[in-house]
Each structure stands twice: as C-alpha cells, then as structure tokens.
Length: 423
Length: 160
Image 1 (cartoon, chains in turn blue, brown):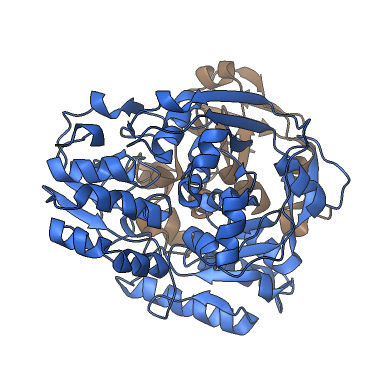
Image 2 (tube, rainbow over the protein chains, first blue to last red):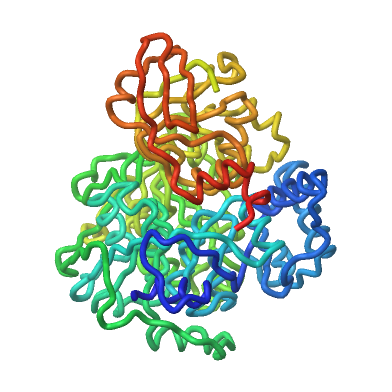
C-alpha cells in the first residue's frame, strides 16, 4: 500500500484497502472556519428539526476553529457570523478557537502546520477545499462540505472512496528563482484542473525532499486545483523537526510499502523547471513567465495559505530589499506567528520601505471576500491558488497566479516579470 | 422527475461563478438562491423555474468546498445537474446534503440536449427521456454508496 492507503486502512480498522473501495474512517482531527462553521450550525438547526440529536460533539478536543475568511469584519453579517462561531465553540466545549485579535490566529491551513494541529499518519478533514495543504505533513487531509462536517462532528467518522494515487517525482533540485509554485503550476498545466479528480496526488523525489516544509505545503495546497481528494508527501526528518519545534513528538508516522502501487507516475527534471504563471481564468492555463512579460499590472497580492507562509515572505523580501514597488502591492502574512517572524527578520521594514502595504492575516481578497478585491478590468498578479472569473472580485477582473518571487519581481516593474530578468 | 433544461455548453463551471465568494457569509438558503450562477449568468435567477435541470460539460462544480453552491442551485428550483463529470466536493455535497441530483451523462447526450428541452429522468432505470426531441439517453448509474445515500435521503438518514 502507498501512504494514503495505509492511513485509510488504519483509520478504517482494515488490514488493507484498495482503490475504489468505500470505507468509513475514524477522523483524528476536524476544523471549521467562519464560513463552514456557520454552515454547519445551519445543518445542526435542520437536524434538530428532524429530531436528530445535536447535543454534543463526538470529541471537542479533536476539533479546532479558525477565523480567517471574513476577518476583520467589514460589515454586520460577517461580524454576526463571528459571534455565532464563538457561541458554538463555547456551547460545545471546543477550546482551540483561534480568534482574530486574540494572540495567534491566521488562515486555517497555515495554523494547521504553524501550530502542529495535525500530525503525520492522521485523518484530518475540514470545511474548506484547501484542507489538502496539510497533507505535506504526512497526513490524509481532505476538504468536505457542511453536511459532511456536521456528520463528522457528531459521529467522528465519514465515508471515503479510497483514491487511486498519482505520483509526481521531482528529480533534482529546483534552480534558483524557481519555487514550488512554479512546479505545481506546471503539473496542473500538464494534467488539467480535473487531471487528479477523485485521486490522491503524492509528491516525492530528491527535488521535493530538498524543499522546505513551507514549499512542500504549496505543492499539496494546489492539489485542490487539479481536483485531487488529497495531496500527500511522506514525512522525513524536516517534518519531524518542524513538529518537534512546535512541541509535537507523540505520533506514529506512516510511509508507503516498498511495493506501493500508483495509478501513474509522472517524472520531472528539476533543472528544467522555470518561473511559471497561470493566466486568467484557470489554474491550468499556464505559461512560462518570459512569454507573458508584456502584461501590464494594476496590483500585486501576496497573501493566502498558498503564498504568505514564512518562506514565501522571505522570497518576497529578497526581491524587494533596496527596491521600490511600481504598482499597489498588498502583503498579508498568513498567520500572526509568521507576521512576528517576518518582523523579527526585518522583512516588514523591507516591505514598507519598498512602498508596499502590510495587512493582517486573512483569506481576504484571495476569495473575493474583502480587503482588496479587484475592480472591473483590473489585472492582478497573485500568490494565491485560484483565478476563476470573479475569484478575487469583479467577474471581469483578471488574476495571474504566480510564485512569491515572480509576484515580487512583477511588483517592482509593474509588468509580469521573471525574477531572473530583474536588474 | 420532469423539467426543462438550462444548458451551459462549457467545462469547469466553478463554485466561484455558481456562488461568488462575497456571498459566503450568507447562510439563508432563500437569499443564497438569488445569487445562484451570478458569476456566469446574471439572468439565471429570473429565468430558472422550479424543477429545471442544468446541463453542462466536464468538471462541474470545481473549486471550493462551499455547500452554498448546491444549496443556491437547489433553492433556485434546480432538481438535477446533468454533466459530463463533476468535481468531487460539489458531488458529495449534493448527495450527502440531499440537495440536487448530480447525474453523469455521456458526450452524445450532452451534445444532443438543447437549452429548453423537456427531460424526464428516471433514476430507477437510469433513463433520461427527451420529450422535446423524442429521444432516450442512459445516465451513468450511481455507484453503490451514492445510490444508497440518495435513496435514504442524505447522509444523516443513511444507515451504513
């Protein structure tokens, strides 16, 4: 069995599982945020009317809650959702509630790895499609809707069809100026936005294990954009160290067997990878940066679970140090812990000196919610994960998805720019 | 189940156009319905009728896990989406939440069905009758678990 099958076998108390088999798995961790939380509350209300008990959760200690999509509240409805969420966590005894403006908080997927809330070998489900992100820690991490999350919260289990696994092997290190984002955009360009539909995407090879934990999280995060059920990387010493630094040492990591089966293996040569963007209006609409360098931009957005981790900000600081931005540039670290670390490392001063704006952690404009949404015809380069019509605001705005290095280099010139071509 | 078709001849109709992100803070189902398909077809709300079907191409509902998407369509009156394929979260949200039926059709049926056609869908026999064109198509049968959850009326009523 491969790692995904091993985790699903353990969690379903089966000796082994095979692709396409339907299993009920016991969930180890579950998460709700300020969009899926009120969605689940609504499902609970419906269930109560049907006479189904919603008096207590299966295990409140395994559930955590993030405020990220609509914080800081821009208007009354969002503010009321936060109150609803707070009442919910209080009533059900959920202690891990990361509140905006109260110590550590941030984008839910970022908290999962910053706070070591999910561990290798676990089954983690959450009410958000980019839950796949956390699979970089060696967990089975999968996004679900409100009804499914309500079911998990009340029963501690959920059904899954065991996915086939596509294995993406990166041979050799990525060249300088090329990031995980470039690699995963290239993959999505190759296989398409439904190229991994219902499947697992596993990453490996020397190039992947050379990557920092933050960079690996970009790979698994974007598996959602290829339609994958989960993205996963077998954990190594870097993961062990990352978790140990956050006090997490008690877990049983799983790895695939030496004869693990994959539906298909894709091999890439690290040295051939190039800075890449996804053009509007699909993550599969990819092009190398040098072929899009005539595109004039209105704005650069450096934010989200995909593109505002510590290593992402470090890459941006490398470009912006001693330079000025030519277009509006918004930088929103993905969590308070990252914000502080960026401050301690002098990145925030570099950003402000360059003329960029630094904002609070939030999903914000990534999902077109608030905090910098795009107007009609505006063109944005963004370190986020999706560029569907209207994703970041007006349906006739345009978003180019890029790595933090490409987004920062483009902020400096005002045009889409390969960081290798920056003076 | 009988109704008329609203056809979108395109692939990858994503959750951001089915229910734009700005409305994610809304959890009133009737209000969500007024914004259904707003990113793709601003006239949708005024033209959709109770019992209608949507027909679309590959990977319908890709993107976000927002259950708002099947909720907004269902509460607009849509009883089923007939597509070449579905994205996984949209599909399971529709089924587990007992909202609209996600029905997979083949290329021939997809090409043949026109906007406004009257269809009759029989899930028990996997048959789709196009009364306007006087033709019959086969839908892809639901897998065992999906069929059982639909028959039960959603995940909470399903006994594993």
